[in-house]
Length: 239
Image 1 (cartoon, rainbow, N blue to C red):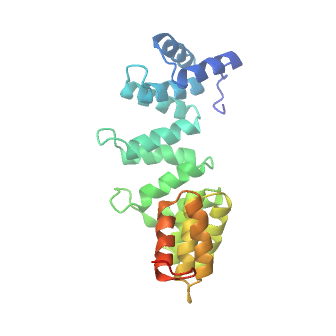
Image 2 (image 1 turned 180 degrees about the vertical axis):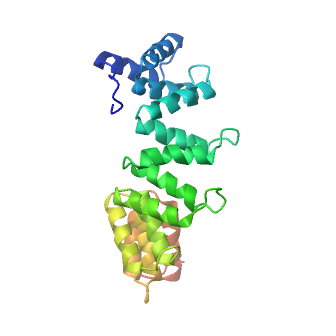
Image 3 (image 1 turned 120 degrees about the vertical axis):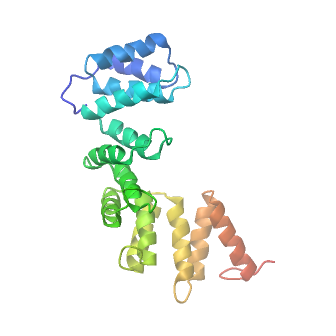
């Protein structure tokens, strides 16, 4: 598992899957705890997540956090990202931005785009005690480089508004097109809005984008299409 510790055997993996898929009981929890105490970072991760989130056992959040921290120290990037997310976005009682950011950075440095996006959120949030826009943009660009569609949509919005980066509509469109190509409906919606904001507005393209996003279930795209029908922009006016 990348931790240098011998991992669980295949049979153990199957039993772990049984536990984490909602079949937890005291005996199975003790099984995970036994493997964790033997040094398996993978078991530590699943034990921590089970103790924190399972609906089938008596939860023990503090113990779960402790096992997640040990798993992160053992090299489990998913433990670091979950621990970081809990510490920065969880209940007020558990919140510790600096420790959370440190764990997210551990995962982000392995190239995990989700961790990089979460880290950028912390640095870009004005109410965050760690607000540092330059770092936020840097981590957001890293997430985009590692293929995060959500990151592409957010960075595209910043380029289209000239927020914390130089205004660049062409770059915004490139990022949105790439995210849309991966199936991100919000990117298709944003492409439609970008078409509406162009000079002159490209109503035909906006209709195509809004229609595609609406077919994908986007309520916002349905509203945009309805407004275009009411105004007769790019479509036959329909009152």
